Length: 366
Image (cartoon, one colour):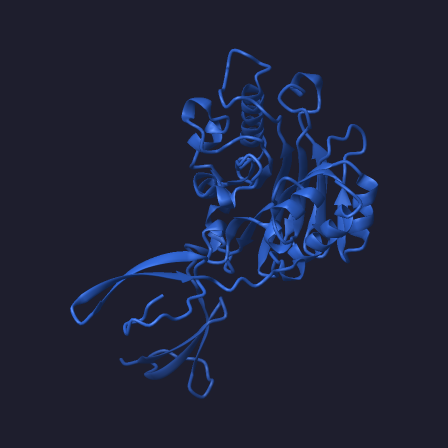
């Protein structure tokens, strides 16, 4: 970059660029090509981080039929440890025994799988920050198998005294991008059915709850309305929000499934969490682990074809009690400057003590 004197100085904020600059010298113009580059510092998994003590940190991650090879488990253990999320919602976990071994090596974490029919979904959670009250699956009977080849996995939990519902999903894959409502076996239609069932389930059972729905939903948020399988949730924007909508509408470099490329992994929150998501340190991000593993090919060959997507929810520090909104404090005691009770017709300084613990001083002139 050029400073005001026309000299080149190092700017670390951009990658390899070609800058075309006109310089004037003694009334003559020179066309100069300046090539600048950023000193790229190699990052390793030791530099990877996401979670913090100040926020509820949730990560959804499809680990592509874990494990891909003999190296996968060591990579995944290091990634999970360094991301330091409160909850991981995982998809495509084929070897549950190996994953349990990994989790046993990470202090203060536990994991959960379905005990009967298993569809590859799993939770890993921090037992110090997350208090699980219930774990179950929904839409498990045969009428729902077409919409849900893998039954959604629900976990009810508490974090810092607040209750939450998280629903882990892995929708039917593939399709042609065209939603055919007349064909129940159309891949887009099956995902549309899944969204319809889930919205009805949430509206009927958790209308006033802190809900996070996430997973590999296998479709694009930015599709045209007539082909958008998520439209029921998108239209109900007073009650629900896909927090990664801007990612879906943005650069493909930030998407969760670079091989296509497309953005298939999503996070939906209910309106009870809108305010938390607007806090300064709240965010949603596709976590580009490949940047910490020397590039996409190494990550894809040894870990997964999906990047994880995570959400940080910073909480408001003040909890408002609606019973106190119209509360009027009452005087419980009033004394003079010497601590004696106030008598009638008193003039001078008085000190008032209120039932909410506050103290006020005032002068009385009669």
